[in-house]
Image 1 (cartoon, rainbow, N blue to C red):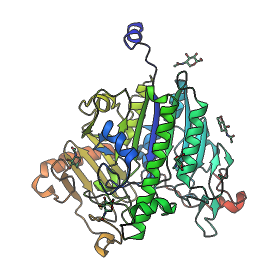
Image 2: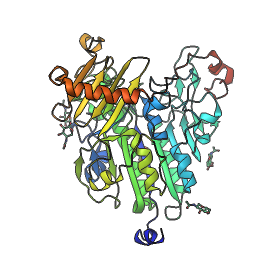
Image 3: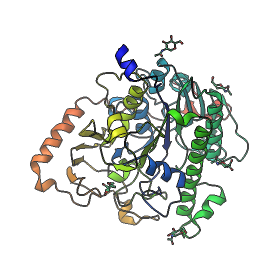
Image 4: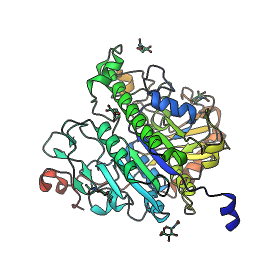
Length: 468
Ligand SMILES: *[C@@H]1O[C@H](CO)[C@@H](O)[C@H](O)[C@H]1NC(C)=O
Ligand SMILES: *[C@@H]1O[C@H](CO)[C@@H](O)[C@H](O)[C@H]1NC(C)=O
Ligand SMILES: *[C@@H]1O[C@H](CO)[C@@H](O)[C@H](O)[C@H]1NC(C)=O
Ligand SMILES: *[C@@H]1O[C@H](CO)[C@@H](O)[C@H](O)[C@H]1NC(C)=O
Ligand SMILES: *[C@@H]1O[C@H](CO)[C@@H](O)[C@H](O)[C@H]1NC(C)=O
């Protein structure tokens, strides 16, 4: 042990900045699509490591579950869908979260942005789940300026907090700016040399509703579709936020020992305005367009190999053990995630050759990747096409009927044009067996009916814990 410490020299565990974009499409970043204006993201992606086979869940809550626990959502009961604000659902308290683990290693842990892992009881909210501070919203979507969820009677509530208190940012301030200002305030409160920071930044951008200050939309004046123009502006506002936070990290001396990870939480919603081309499908689907995230890692000095595209398999559950190992901890045996630091830092082969896209016991669909092959069981979901821009065609919208099993060779056919199940019954049966092995370990989906006790009218107009 002593020898190890000496060999490692005086190196302290790094600051970890984990940036999550919401509903960002595969083709909505500058390093995939040169019509996107995302210079801050592009520069870090190109100078760092572009993660080209980095997988996430088809929707928000399940991906955030992976980041927080290192377990697949079919092991936590969160596999079916995003949590609506009136549903008494949550990340079960029996799971120790990544920030709780990092706190045991003396990290200071802060979160700014979207939680979306349940809030019906205080014990499920960020400051009770390992974060020293939290500014943001508990639910999954809201207005970018007013922080109101919906405008019907049951939904009309305010959702924005600083720690546990209702917080009202200056009137009319756009959420990307609010999140950036708070992130920089945190940097001012942490000592870059003596403290170790875990900063979790799940941005509201670029989830619906489509809202952005006019100046960002104007950057895309030559895009004729209003929804797409606004959406692209939202992406550029996110890019500016990332640029401002990165500059602040550098100005304050954090970049001498920092790892930045950027990822989308799921594919883009093609029915709203996102673009996952050339990948197939949309957010909510098991297609690559729903599950393959735009992602990169960047560091000034912690990566041994940089400036390239890494095609090794990485899954959202892997960030927990990767970060925990970097911080000096050891992940629990049996965790679904694996430490990918050798892959990310040096381009070593992935620590995994298999992952489960999802097992949904309510929709009765599932998918698994083993080596180059992907098996999809049941319908992959709605929005099945290769759609460039809205409005979608009727055939994109249709819930097509699919064979019970589809097989794709993702290495030669990443766009999922050719179902080869009939040509390879042996591979199908091998992957069905692997999928069934995982199904045997599934926890049933904990989906709950909406509870009227959640109504913000009961809490002075705010979405508030205390009803489960
Ligand atoms: C729109 O303008 C940008 C920047 O000038 C350019 O890169 C892009 O090709 C243009 N797009 C179209 C559809 O003309
Ligand atoms: C954390 O800090 C405490 C108090 O300074 C110290 O006793 C403990 O050894 C530290 N733990 C680690 C893992 O560094
Ligand atoms: C939230 O908690 C952090 C950490 O304890 C503290 O620095 C900050 O002042 C708190 N904010 C409010 C509004 O209480
Ligand atoms: C980034 O910083 C500039 C300069 O301070 C500021 O004008 C802009 O609003 C900031 N953008 C965001 C998203 O915080
Ligand atoms: C990234 O992945 C896509 C889809 O699999 C593939 O077509 C492309 O060649 C990869 N890019 C690089 C640079 O390896």
